[in-house]
Length: 466
Image (cartoon, rainbow, N blue to C red; front, side, top):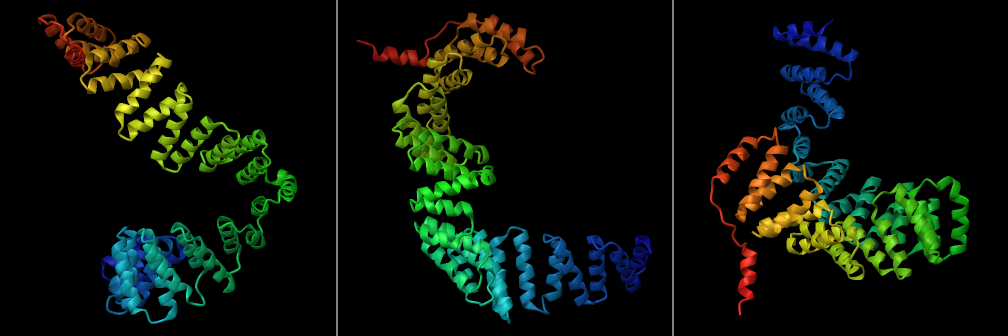
């Protein structure tokens, strides 16, 4: 018994013997999908289509992205079973990320469905496809139709409730999960999701009746302003829950409600250790600083909160408010400069890089950005000033030296241009443009050149004329 024997049978068109040989091999290696493919192929040749379908279905159980299996199953069912044909075609299109085609296939499969379980499963997948395609309302419609069936799966209710939350319909999300419980789906997932929704909807009394989660119970007690009982629970839970981020968030809320802001901030720090860069970290800090009347740090943290959530324009506005309170924080200035530059407001960004360079004359990033900007607007004379500062910080930086040489050449300051091209040749040995710069220097030294006024200088002169 060997693969060579099976292949020889197949080559000799002895398909039955080849099939039997492959089957024996497969029974010893049931995880070998290539053997299943051969069995499926031979079953097709022998026109044993039910057997072929069984083999290709098994392949999909192990590899749901196997295109060949879908194509073969479509060939098997194209005339035999239109429901299955459209299901497999839809799955193939889904694997190929052609969601619109997959949706159309499942609609056609729905029209061919004969039994309730077919209709239910098809609608469920159709809802999933709509959800993946970003069409939440159509997904909701399909999931609602699935929920009309007594044996609707729990996942349908959970997905439906999440979609309602996305659509800002929390009351509808609650109603869906309450309906799930009435239908006997009283699982942990349903109860905890429902409890969270009750809290979101401002009903901690119902939430605490629904949840079995100790942390959620503390949250409910705090939201009910039952601070004493919440404190008792937090104390009892300290050893067991001290490694959980939510526990520290609840402690922060407890201290905040008691106006113990220093302890609240310590709890936020602990929370941040377990949930790095979470929006909740910055939201909690912002609220604490607001209560402490520390407007500067409140704005900084609201800025970070909105930045993490992707609200860049709001974040910039918060940072600008912080800047109005304190205008010499280099970290804040850097953040504003970067955000404004990313938003396309380059001129405004340069104002902040300029402030940084005045506060910290050794900030290379600010000097480099300012030099680059001055070059972009044709102000080469000011560009050389920033480049000179960069050169003084690192006299061996070949990139800065070359840019300085080129800038001096643009304003026709021949002595300085020659000086820095020579310096470039001293430090830039091995650079790919070494010979090119050597040639440029030779040409420059033999060229008459008179230094010209820069464009900006000329503009100032025009405005200063009597």
